[in-house]
Length: 97
Length: 279
Image (cartoon, rainbow over all chains, first blue to last red; front, side, top):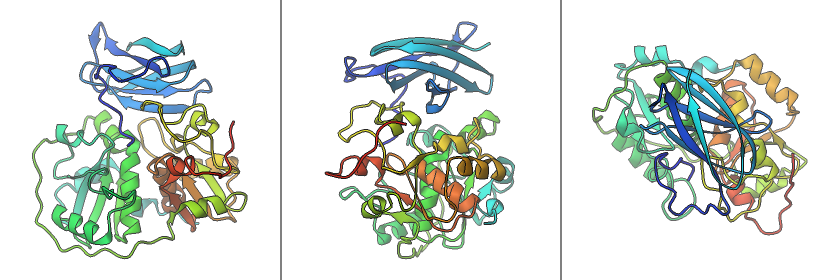
């Protein structure tokens, strides 16, 4: 299967000793932005994956250790955030301007 | 090579103007099979790629008779214009497009940008249930001139254009699946030797619409696609490569292009076949 799991599910069953999870929330003025599109770009700026956020603005990727960029696309604006991910859980907050 | 764009791709305005057209059937195909239920284009029927387009025992298409029964029950006629759309930049809609072509449906089109463009435009979605009168649909025998199997993929090394449309990190072997999925997989990482890596995403704009014919021609020319050779496209399970198959054959008019739907989950699990790693 290739469908993204629900973006607001808990991490039960995900092995954080092997997976590099990048997850977080898209907000504007402190409030969650539902159903925005979040894109994961690799260290060369290439598209790696895209998910649509949950109603609470949550998103999650399963990546690998290294440099990543998150880019948000929504009807209400855009945002971008870069991070260095390690094995395990990596939290990222994305605020739309 | 002449563009067939107008025959195979419709934009959102065209779609809205044809919502009431009795000869046009909108069909939503999503990777997230619950998306349709939360809101869909008015009048669109849903196709579940996992339960309705895949045989539930053998890894393969459903047999011709089952496809005929499925389309008959959905109310799709042989002479209908089928407009496919879906989430995730139309990956699964493109897969369904290719699938409908394998079974010989005449007039199939993609909605440019799919659900994403529709939503970003703020166009209306409906949660009304949809029912269409049943038809008696007749499919053709599978057209294997557009479908590649594992032995062809293996034989094509160094002889055909092999286009790996996965992300660079999947191509190199760093990731085993697209990064919206957990990475536990049984197969080896890497790519088929001699394949060029042209990620499907390079053919699309951020809003999910296809790039222009000129941009697409430049993209594949720069990547080293040899116009004098036949082409096989693959990804992980054949849905992203359907997107590229659509670009090469349906938009750019390349004649001999096959989609290898066994893709990396099959090839990367074969015993003894050559694998290349790295960029």
